[in-house]
Image (cartoon, rainbow, N blue to C red; front, side, top):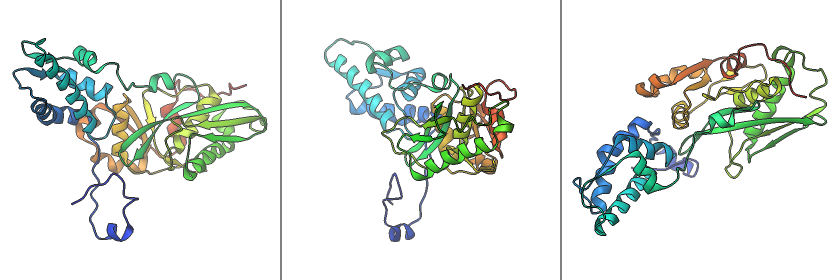
Length: 317
């Protein structure tokens, strides 16, 4: 039995001779239980402490999970728990702690310092032209922010963010769909607007390579948001490939993407209708706390994603 983070680096003949088992990431609740049952006792023992000297409250562990780690597994979670235990062990060895120390949420922040991760969806999507997409990576799902901007020009399209060929094609297809359906999507949009404006689509975190077709619906939504001045709802993330006729095609890794949405405080996931059969792969407790909207067309995506349900109107100068 062997393990790997990605299959691409394994030679094809070897892959043909093994059975591949895909393991999805853990939910926040699963991480909490793993930490309480295994990680905390192990780190207490490894750092020379005992259960009579230290204990962790559930809010403290939740704070470590949400504010100091951002991963599909629990490797970094165990490291952070170990950091807390080492600092407590030092205090015990120096005689500064004489009784059992209960690690609470405020004490976690005192021992680990400033939080490392924040939920940026509300801040990022507060302005029109930004949509929250979901991506799959070999180490779990990730949240992507798709940004669109327009400026006077000659109809050029600029795509940045270290994107692969497939993702660049998705951006081109998204713009083509919006242009072809501008009359239905954008009320009173001047006929020559696209000929007199340049469009810039950017996916931040430019140092990280990104590729795949599943950001297509997010790109269409970002463009529609920009042109209509309607911001995308901050609690919504989406995934799906879009065609030139506005159909939303199925994607892979729905569970991993849903877990990424949960880690970022997102409560509504828009996914292709053909992926509804994959809902059983998502843990029941996660389905209870999140809302899944399955769509077949881009019109349904815009209806669910854009704030203020009214006809789109042209607002960009």
